[in-house]
Amino acid sequence: MIRLPPGASVRTELLAGLTTWLTMVYIVVVNPGILAEAGMDHGATFVATCLAAAIGSAMMGGLANLPLALAPGMGLNAYFTFAVVKGMGVSWQVALGAVFLSGLLFLAVSLLRLREWLINAVPRSLKLAIGAGIGLFLGFIGLKDMGLVVADPATFVTLGRLDTPAILLSSLGFLAMAGLAARGVKAAVLIGILLTAALGVPFGLTEFHGVVSMPPALSPTLLQLDIPGALKLGVPVIVLTFFLVDVLDNAGTLIATTQRAGLLDAQGRVPRLREALLADSGGALIGALLGTSTTTSYIESAAGIEAGGRTGLTALVVALLFLLTLFFAPIATAIPGFATAPALLFVACLMAGSLRGIDWDDVTDYVPAVVLVLGMVLSFSIATGIGLGFIAFAAIKTVAGRPREVSGAVWVIAVLSILKFGWG
Image (cartoon, rainbow, N blue to C red; front, side, top):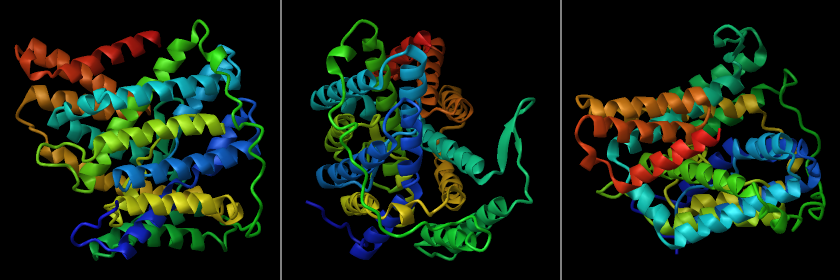
């Protein structure tokens, strides 16, 4: 049952759900495009994406009463298409089977409380670093989508052209969000997104192509997964990779978002963690059955949390909006990337504040934290950053003669990360 905490209101939760949806609805455009590269039907994967996001978010809101939304994960979809299907020559049906099997593994570990043990045993310094690292990772994505940073062969990234309307409007949107937030406006992020999108209309950057359309057929991907094929030699490595990446991504997202919402308990533990993990696991299973890559918790939920979301009602609103997206795709996809990108940058600035809680007088605490943060941003991977941070924490504590400060969970994640990096 969803209970509103003191100071919360239904109106605020509704607004938070709308804000989260606006910052993550891009996935209904991006995910089908990536999966189409694997040979999957574009229309069917659009429907699968919307349904997976709706069902996963509803499970998170209903089971865990947390303001977190789920959808097919960015990064995991790229691994699905470019590393598994194209890189290994595996059919997309077999790859979906691997996603389903990894979902079963997620579910088993969640029921056995092993994932809960892993996440609750993370030391405070690494929890704070995970929150800040994901924030800066999100900020880097925002800067890239705004066009403020672009690829460069000599320096890897460099400043983009600042004389284009999209970049100028994105920058204006970011400044509007920050200014409104400074004035105490709860809907600062949402107002900034809508303002930026509206200003793009005269420049032809925000375009509307109709209002209502019937959803495409789901049959080309529904229940098309090949589980027997996924059980063949070599695919278990794929299953374990999906599993490890999703565990680390989910752990980081759960810790970062609940910390930002002020929901962690006195011991720094995520509330109703078992239910949250069951929702994550169930979302991955259902997504594979529908015909999409791994469904996972979205860090964009931080935007809704900043708008005041504190309960599962926020997630349920997101679920409803993704269902409506099936029929209002022309409107949903009219919010362009340059309008949502400044929201990612603004949320990044807020999340980076968790770094102040790290003990900067203890080398064994702050060095692994910095390694974790830099690893996330520069490798463009939440899972890689977490892995590097945990390896550094275990190694530095041991060399410093303080191995007893390293929990069993940290050792497990460090060893698993070493194995994953070794698989390359």
